[in-house]
Length: 568
Image 1 (tube, rainbow, N blue to C red):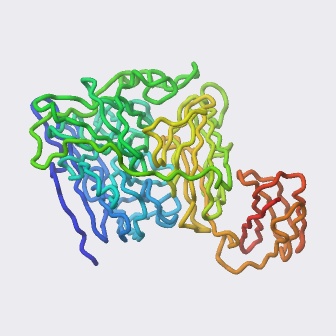
Image 2: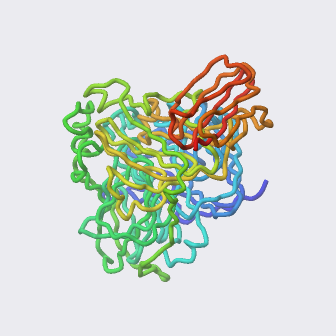
Image 3: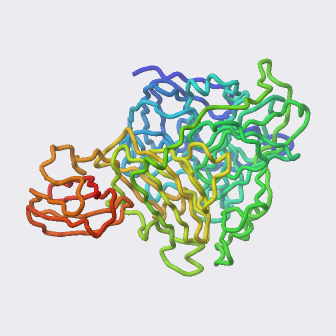
């Protein structure tokens, strides 16, 4: 077994150190890198509250997990051992990997088993994360500590004059709100998440050098949206979104971060030595219909039970206190004016547009605010592939939210670029690569463009879902496969079905069907025709359909095939 290169920049221990003021020194996770990395998902105990011991979960430690530092272009193998008495998975959130390596619900790690995915790191420099993704148990396992950072580095980012010394001027900040019972044990499925943790630390402080610092922000909360800024009206520069650097830094005083989202910011503390500032969520400024605002549902819809009893909702609160100390010897003191050039997919290259709608399972004010919620009138079914997407398709996805709460939508496999939100262009700080976007309530819309490239698997799907973990666990999730055109949806055997002419202006002829079921689907994923118990030869008349791309799926008792056809 190859050696794991493991380095520890700041070690505060797994039990956080209380200060006289009641504050605790911010825990900085250990950093791991190398060609082979071992992770053990295990139970533990942590002193989050003075005088109490909380039962927790962690990777290689009692609570949370180490930061995994990867290099673009390098090969890596993860050996993930599940030492729990229950099943889990590990999803590499944001990474572009094959579906069998993605760690979704279809890749369970049974108790006592080890899962060893291997892949080449293809992603751009950015902040990603890893966490369990077991259907109906994601919230529980993440809440108890299943979460860790992934930092990817590349040559473009490395050429810029940016802070990048981990734990010295480059800090990961995992922001979570959690609920506890009277014994200080975690509680799930409740809106009383009124305890704030930063890197698992309650009432956290950091001795921050007086120079330009980089903070890698991750919202790892179950439902809460943060509206981040600093006290003393201190502005900051956002340099990266979920999947990579922006074209240029964007100056901000507020940054909205929904569950699953990441952002990298630069803060210049050069003139503040000896002072103290706070990282704050200005939740009083959040509009209704966002979890964390004064009212979590929009337009007077039914309230969320116990929501108003949570003092965090609609009020400003501190997440981290920064005590500004002397700068380091090699301090970064300026912020570059430009970063990289993002190449956005062209809408003229789009081969399909897919429409996804969010609705409550039960209509009415209570359902609109509390769910459960569904996508395209269906809750998640492990046995149903909601979309079959041809490899190398460039697509626009249109998201429409017909519920009273905002939903952070996350898609696996790809990064996307936001085209518009409620018809308007995204703000400058949202024009980079994304894999999570907050969709506004009550008819709110988001459109994004992406490309499904590099990986195809006819049996293992990728997920898309709301990243409010309670919503995801309750079924607000779907799945898709990416397939090579002309190959079976069950295997890679040579085609035996003939479809001609293709392209066609009206009639398609199909031969050698062998008592199959046939479906015709539009590019949006809408099923247009279904035929059961068909003969060996069939005809499909496309005359009544507009010109464009269509898909024919043929299924028999042995396997299935999916074909792309063009109506001219």
